[in-house]
View 1 (cartoon, one colour):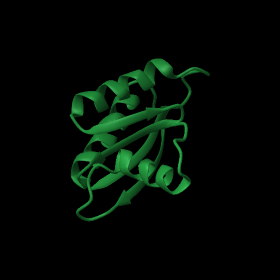
View 2 (tube, one colour; view 1 turned 45 degrees about the vertical axis):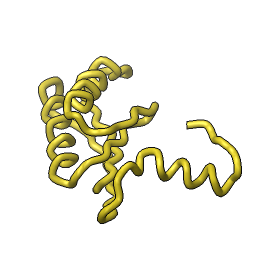
View 3 (tube, helix red, strand yellow; view 1 turned 120 degrees about the vertical axis):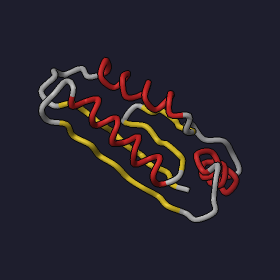
Length: 102
């Protein structure tokens, strides 16, 4: 399984891009993959082909609004592990002995 953290932004569309981000989040939500939205991007969990296809879809959606799209992506592949969206945070909380904000 793969965790993909991505931020996809159309360039030249002004200071606020939340309306465009919402279109990508809609694609992520419709994908059926587990995900978490945060203030600087989205983390998606799934198999490699599925998360890469989703990232491509998001980039193509942003290209509908701009001739230039910026994408930051970070991938974490770990064979045989699932549910890491929450498991990684729970592991840190266990080591700290307390809950953390997330």
